[in-house]
Length: 174
Image (cartoon, rainbow, N blue to C red; front, side):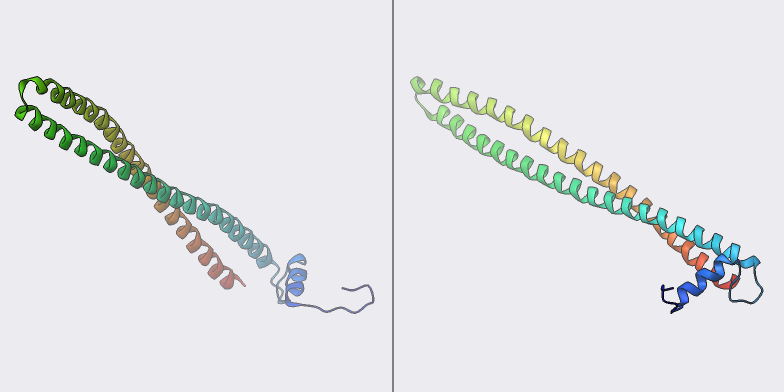
């Protein structure tokens, strides 16, 4: 209402006035106003909880994707290490062949290379195994987050159905 006496009455204002007066539609149905308010409050609470559930569902899905990405990175790093391991194996095989074909005075030189490659391969293997274990752990965490995401999504769906049923119930009360 304006201060000059001119009043434009919208449908929302009309409903609010009737709700405050305890009735709806002027049909003498003063008891259903309380029930309608209760249903409206219940619906608002469910919608709020649903928003939180939706947020949690989105967060767990994002985490699952991030963890799966981390797993892929670790798998790639492990693959790189295994390729490095393979190159050392090839060099070791060539050093062994050279040692076996070399004259006796050169065999020790090639044997030291064989020993060095064997040691380097052991170090590389430790790194590659650790990276593979990390990848497996990231995959497991991703799967756990997806499982949680599905639970949040199911919960959100139940709440949305509840809101729809409350809306149907509200229509039948009015």
